[in-house]
Length: 130
Image 1 (cartoon, rainbow, N blue to C red):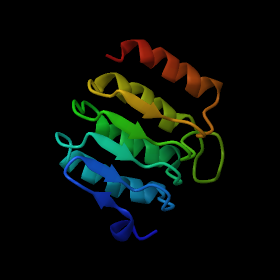
Image 2: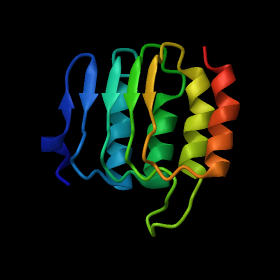
Image 3: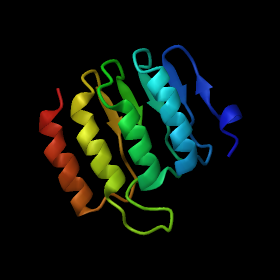
Image 4: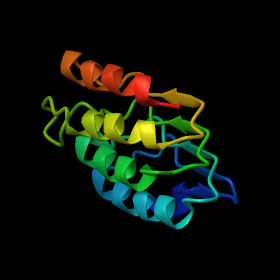
């Protein structure tokens, strides 16, 4: 993918939906998320191929974000690795980070190959979310 032309960034929103982002692209997205940590209120990365590795990069970049209100990472194969094999590491990374995101009000994780183990990690994290 050509990340530069695919990324739409405004003062408060980052959008890179439907552009076939990979785990490698996710590392660059994570850099943007870190630089805009105190400003972004909406992040839309739906319909890409971040996989477990990309999910870990994005999740870590969001740790402690106190202003992000909407996050859409649906349909990104977060429960799979680059070989299309089960990998819960990305889902686990989001489960650890979600409770640190104080302003988050809307989260979409749909269609991500989240298995029972991943669902357990998320379920354990949700009561700690504010």
